Length: 86
Image 1 (cartoon, rainbow, N blue to C red):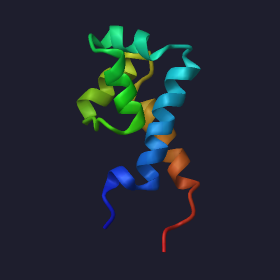
Image 2: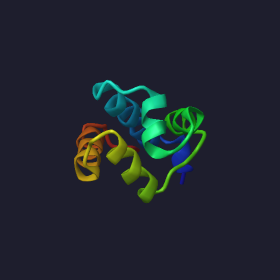
Image 3: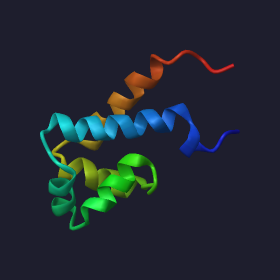
Image 4: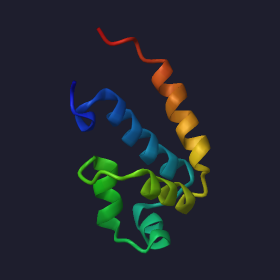
């Protein structure tokens, strides 16, 4: 099994995270300030250099005024559209 950080699914997760921030009109710096973190933290998360757990994802969603459930449902909708792996 391929490590999840190198999977297409993880790439899509990171893309959704970045898109969510941009759709809210927020900069990485603004999200970082809301989290009490640095801009580089948010950048590393969005680039996949820094993995996050569910608690951190919830904090990121909250900082972007997005419900965790809505974010995860959006990822699920996107993943369902992918062709099955062989």
